[in-house]
Length: 342
Image 1 (cartoon, rainbow, N blue to C red):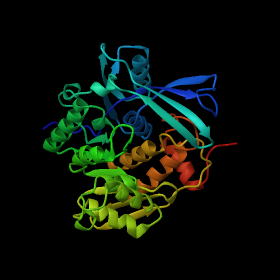
Image 2: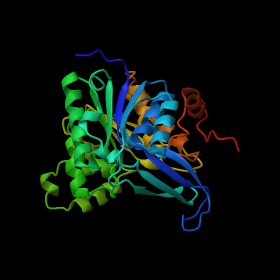
Image 3: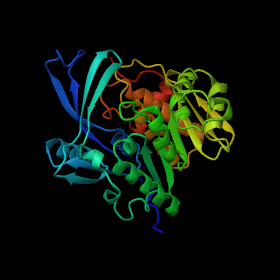
Image 4: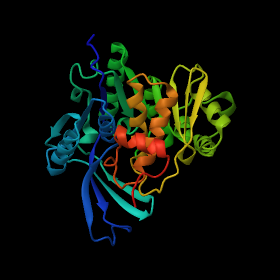
């Protein structure tokens, strides 16, 4: 077995990102900005900003957007292990601002290079030398080969004794709820640490006798209403993980977050901020939590940092650009208010 170097490994698709320069539909917005974005690389950048070494594995097209993806992620200090695919383009997403704090993201990723991720892209030793592997529910829904890559990484991690983190991050545009429940649930069953909204936790939970005849859609609708219900959240987590062997972190939007482990629950309130852009806030939350996890922080401290990271991300446009440093977090937590000078 290789010795862990204290780093985190993550893998997934990062795409070119076109963002409208002001509020409005692309049917009328005349100017836009070019950037990059992807859930796993967003987390990677967030972790590096917080002092945690990270490797990101992915595939990009051998094109200008692919070159930009590699350059920008590497420029943030992430160890980039990207395969350049000459036969498929880098994926693309468009982000339109529909109002303050509200946006719409459209994806153009069918048959993209990132969707062709496969087990051979994850080289020898990269899993085994990590202290933690972080996956999302996005990647296994991209293609059969991407799903195989995720399953192979979890297998290798289990053999090597490496902890596995999963952010469910269900995207309805990629698969139906029934398909996602099966595919993402397979990864969740192997994870040590699971992140999700109440609805996402319900998605990967086993059906109990009392709900066996209830449609998955109605179960998810009921879970959606649990954000402000502490007892309901605890019950939901027990259904997903009755033995309490996993660390389950429930993201509750404006109501903060709950982390459950070994029969105990920890709750941290959210931060009221002037919301500009919510895209990337969940990834920043995960990065904050994992930065404490790899350093063996107590759960309440990990949760406090995660909530602050998520709140700060909402105050500035961009999927990862506002990922905070420890100094920014300390100032925000101490003041408890929106840190943006206006």
